[in-house]
Image (cartoon, rainbow, N blue to C red; front, side, top):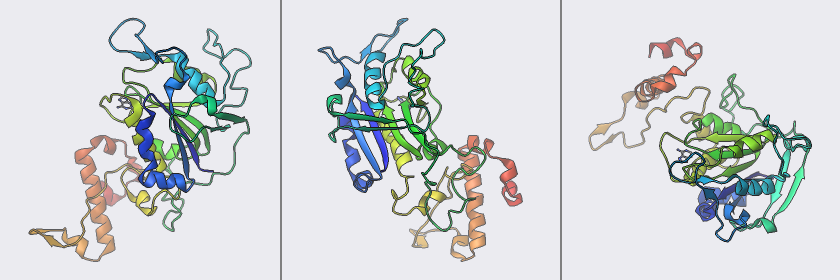
Length: 326
Ligand code: ADE
C-alpha cells in the first residue's frame, strides 16, 4: 500500500486537481491515496462555524479547537482526553494507546472528496514499526549510498509513521530536507487553517498525545489559507516517492537535493547559436571533467550571488580545494 494522505480544509474541492496529471497517475498506480475532508462535516451547529474571535482581542478570526479536535480524533482514531496543568494527558493517555512515533494508523473514508466522517471506518493498529520501508530513493546506478540526498549527519529519520502537518506563516520554513524526510512517512495528515490562524492548543494537544506534529511556512509571505501551502508541500514530498517520477535521476541532481543545498547551474539545449547567442564553449568541448568543473563553479557563484544564506550553511570541510577557489 502506498502513502496515505488526508487533507482537512473548509475548501476540500480545492484538492480536486490532485486527480489530474502526475498525481492522478500516482493515485491510480497505488503509490498514494488522497482524501480531502471538509472540516465543517465535524461541526454540530446550524451555521457550521469553524472559527471565533481571538481571545485577548484583535482583528480577524481564529479556528476553534473543538471542531478540529473532533475531526482529527476521528481521523487518527483517538479518544478525547483532558489535559492536566502540566500540559500532559491524564492517565489512559492516547500515547500509551499506541499512537506515538511509528504507530500505524489506518483510516478508510469514502472515496469522495469531503466525505463525511459518518461513512469513515477507522482502524487503529498499534503495531510498532522498526522494519521495512526501504530507502525511498531513485533506484539508479548512480544513487549509491554516498550520493543519496541528505546522507550527511543530519540525515532525516526514516520509517515515520503518521505525521500531522499544519501550514503556518509563523512557523519554520519548509525545505527540501523536510520533503525528503516526510516522503518516508506512512501517512500524512494536513490541516489547512485560515491565515489568521488556528488555536495554538491544537498542535500542542496532539503532540502531547504522542502524534508527530509539524508546523511549516512555505515562504515569507502571507496566503489566505493553508490550501496552497499544502499543495506545495504535497508536491515536493510525493514527487520523491519511488515510481512517482518518470526519470528518477532528475531528482538526485537538482537544486537543494544533495547534502549541500546549492542553486543549479544554468541549462542550455540546441542550437549552439540561437538569435546570435551562443552557449558557453566548454559545454561543447566534450570534456566531461571540464564541464563538471564549469557547472560546479557556476552553481557556487550563482548561489553566492543569489542566496548567500545557503553559502553560509555550507559545510566548508566538504568543499574541495577547487570549490574553495570559486
Ligand atoms: N498560511 C498563510 N500563509 C502561509 C505560508 N506562507 N506558509 C504556510 N502557511 C501559510
